[in-house]
Image (cartoon, helix red, strand yellow):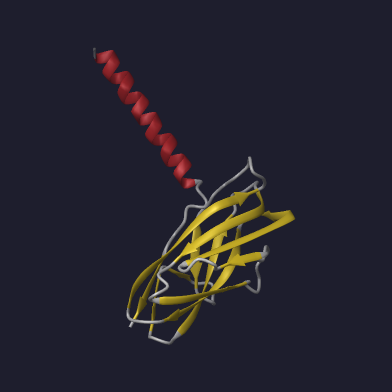
Length: 162
């Protein structure tokens, strides 16, 4: 009985260690201001606009050749416009905002981008009316090809309008 309990504890300890090792190597997405300082929250006055930049990390020894990302927001509180970031290594090829509160950004490059992080897009947020909104991001594709994907762990941006 003691041997079984010790074996179970050893297996649990190993799984926790493996999970924490994998968690450290997860690539992430993040938001910055135009000076490339990380931000997780911004405040706007009604009618005011501010630009933020969405970045995503590319794991070492990987090449990003295509991505598709969906940005969700409350279109009753903010207006959202998307454009290419000036220093982006893989500028958006297609931006769709056909559905209210949703923007889809896609790009591809046969040569790709290796390692580090890359700017996905610049996002201009304009306050429409007072309220709070969490702009969330969902990467539906991010990788070298359909079989080699390394989807970033997404982060949201809290937007407060006064």
